[in-house]
Amino acid sequence: MKKSTKFLSLLLAGVLTVGSLAGCGGDKAASDSASSTEASADGEVFKIGGIGPTTGAAAIYGQAVKNAMELAVNEINEAGGINGAQVEMKFEDDEHDAEKSVNAYNTLKDWGMQALLGTVTSTPCIAVAAEATNDNMFLLTPSGSAVDCVAAENAFRVCFSDPGQGAASAQYIGENKLASKVAVIYDSSDVYSSGIYEKFAAEAANQEFEIVSAEAFTADNNKDFSTQLQKAKDAGAELVFLPIYYTEAALILGQADKMGYDPTFFGCDGMDGILTVENFDTALAEGVMLLTPFAADADDEATQKFVSTYKEKYGDIPNQFAADAYDGMYAIKAAFEKAEVTPDMSASDICEAVKPAMTEINVKGLTGGEDGITWTADGEPNKSPKAVVIKDGAYTAM
Image 1: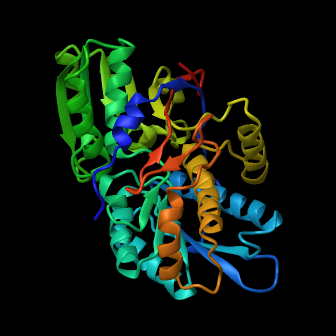
Image 2 (image 1 turned 60 degrees about the vertical axis):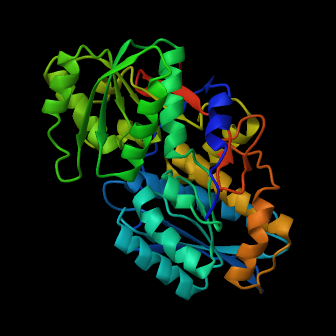
């Protein structure tokens, strides 16, 4: 098992910059359980698998990851591949379900997968990570933020961890004096949500605001939030922190509006996608804030090219899940090249070579800022978040 990481302190020490992004629709979700991008050249290839929800309530995340992974693989192959070998990818739908995610992993293993870019969501990722550890399969999750997603030595992540998001959110709210009284509504049955909340609450003690209400819900009771909202309102909360996914957040915003409660709402990466919820009045999201590693309207050449190409091919503006997956695929390329691995090597041998290589690379991608992304041996990335606000139906700089 890994030693405790220094990632959190590095994250909090980083300067919070501002930027903007836009949600991704995922209108090209696959009707089949899997999709594959085959290498265009003859000869041996690297087989890279992907797992995430391309159908179901969390499909916006998985579809964005699948699209960006496909985009990166095509670019890498056109540029000559990895160590002279082409890349073949196959992506499996897990519907944000742990059991189905393990089944998807086994399908990819039978296919000959040599490394995994996945899974997309935390609970399935934890289940798959256990299988990957047993197989000594290299795993790089683009967006599995729970601590246990990268507990083993073969696992790394591109996104911020849940503790990192929670602490950074509390710090941002406090340092920018966004509110003196804060309420929290979180999902106690979800490792993503509860993990963020725990660290948010701990860091809040160091900030000049008070948590006046902290109310939980579960996956079995995630439709009616009137009780949680009423307690926040009665406590005088000026800001409600929502470390939850966009589906429940949309319901909360709608119910708050009906009861005449108009606080500031602040979320993390799970909030990304709220502007694309079916039948949701996006005007209700006006003023919602969140932290994210990616700004779709950033003026650097790499971001502009990525957004333009992604939009042309998939009809959507990419979200942060797409950006993390894109950087993840290029991180695999960089680590494979650093380790000088070849397609004839076993998945376990590749993993052994790539683990130390991950701590020696720097990916100048979409989500790392000017300093790029580096990784610790604990699997955690070093990069700084951005803060955005929804204004006029789009994400803009705060």
